[in-house]
Length: 327
Image (cartoon, rainbow, N blue to C red; front, side, top):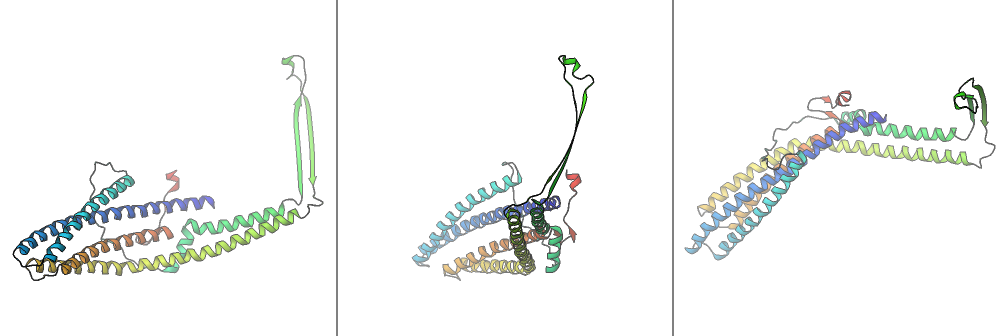
């Protein structure tokens, strides 16, 4: 059982590597996007400030508006500096994880092609019990507790030992004669031990083993409930991912269109409120980052479901490898 449990844990460790890869991938992907946004915003606010300066000199806008745009430009510069630092940090972590040389450039592409399938909760629970290390761990722990109780009942009751000894012996003043015509020496010993009184020691050990067994049984029951509840929540979360991705993608599109329209109207002087322009830009940036965050949530849920069940629902097959070939 321990060997089977270890093999299953090896498969789960592989899925854990995939989860870490998802995290490092999206951490850098987000840093890459944040840097792109920061560069774009800096150049955009620099352009707006120059345009607004001309309008201010002509007396077409108030001083508070030009000051607000100058403040936005300074914030954009600070955001660009921070985004570049975060970008380099996340790039280093990803290269370290992948063991990619530092000199190699990396540019990530968002994995927008996702797989959506319906997963039955009860089916996922059964597959987890059949395939995962935790499923077999519950049975092993109960078996070990029963074994400990059985050992406590058997020890200290009745012991019988039988010894059989056969040997050869010889003595001589001459070393070479020691091995000539040796004499046989045989022994047979039979020993029986029956405790007459142990002052309740054996009974006490049995009670301790019974208490330990009950404690293990209670812990396993609670952990099984938590185990199944965790799978239930993960299946529910994965089921929501398709709709969440759709909402995030739609929000990104709407925010992009709204920002473009507001930007163009400000350029031609039909929008005079800088705050309206700021809000449109913030909504646009946040919508794009939220879409990437929804993508990360999808892929994390995808691989967490694989790890929890050791089953690939996309390919509809059990996750396994040839351990004989591996060793």
